[in-house]
Length: 88
Image (tube, rainbow, N blue to C red; front, side, top):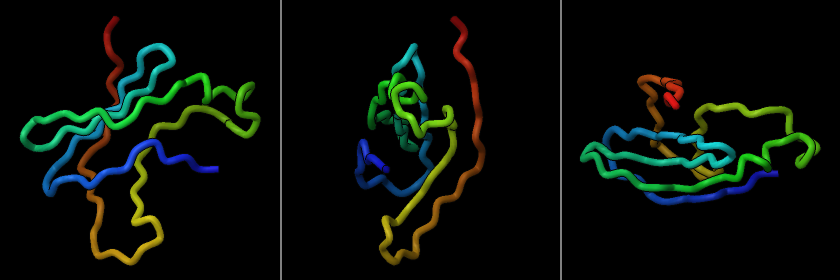
């Protein structure tokens, strides 16, 4: 089962995708080259618990790009991925 939480066109150029986790809230944010930050979606982390979703096996953070089954000539280029816990 797949659920799309948010979809929108993105500008050309470099983008920063950020996942901010606070307690059980997973917020996805997108920042463009001009520094404009957009909130994309927030996921309730309790839905990532195997006791709630019987088929779920853990929290994995990674990148995923798709053309949703449509032909495309575009590409996603990833320069780096960085995990940085926030100091409390």
